[in-house]
Length: 182
Image 1: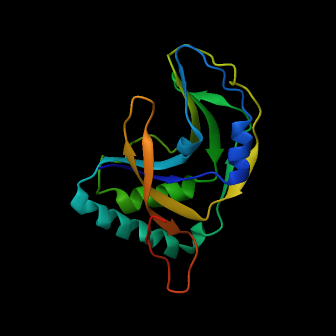
Image 2: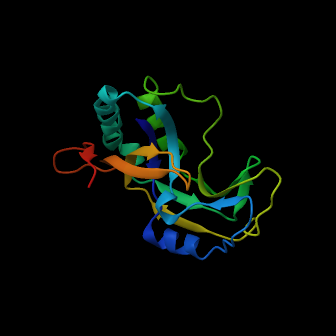
Image 3: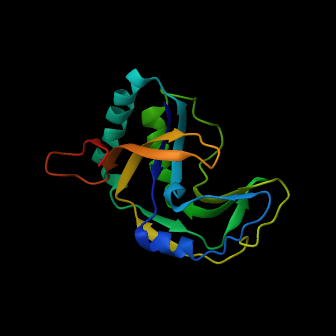
């Protein structure tokens, strides 16, 4: 199973993202609203019998009080990440990404050596293309109240995602546990 750990923007931020001009252009594949997320860690292929272990490890996030009041800050403008990704930079998630990496380091692909660069992907392009949305202003923030474990299925029209687990970043009545996807 191909997995990643992510946070999703709030409905208000999604509304702002919808307003970004996304004209049909050759060589540009715009992501859909259902794909808008910030990846905290890409795990890659994970054996089915390891998924419950990943959920158990991530459940520890809810017990870390320092992560209960995180705010993701998007913007201030749409920019490029590398040669082929058009994105909105997202900051404020660095401590969460570090914790996720520590809790999942033994599963899936080894953690990368690059520092975490939070971003929300809007499009993938051919290298060298400059879509018109580059430089468009977008400034938004949202409170991060949960982390999700997501299964990703590759598809010619873009990846399809299914949330298979959620962990709240606050203490519930019975402590924090990774619930089955709602």
